[in-house]
Length: 274
Image (cartoon, rainbow, N blue to C red):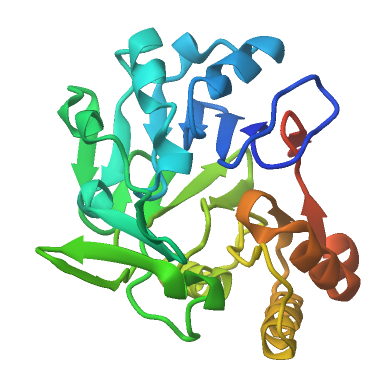
């Protein structure tokens, strides 16, 4: 199995552009996959730099309904009109970020829902023997503190997003199991525990942003949450890879605790799973 980061926030070593967003290309025994699409058509440009033919992708997944994961969907659909694109039905909601200047729309382009290849699912879903999707039904921990500013607009009211539109991809191929999440807005521990409850084991590899990034300095309480998350992850047998919304400061704090169990994957980097 081969997993390539087509785009995320930091520069890699393969001449790829970086941007705030996320996309993975995955080759398995049976499939050529796309997990998320990045913020724009730059995802497709990076695929070209890496020699990856996105026209050959046969399954695509949107992890949740935010622009930085969905902006490349329409350019991808113009290139590849055959690959089904799986997303939770709630991914088309009106999602906003609250800031000092008010509310900013961060949801997906509404035209995406009109694409004939979009497949809406509700909750857990089995694609085939190799691929499945699952959601977090029950949380054992609070969601990361950085989610407090993320809202859904219903009628004229801005409410806390419950992230029911978020799903993870599970790949079982070549004797390995891989969990891929986009941002883990529901919390990476909650995703790991939901995986254990639904699949009866821990994944060999978990790849996800942890949504811990901040533009301002972390408070002592926030740093304690970051280190507590890292300490909890060491209890799993899984190898973790992170990127995008984790943030370098949070990653370095977690790396100090997790050591080689946690690695950062940059734009253009690849993971070879043997």
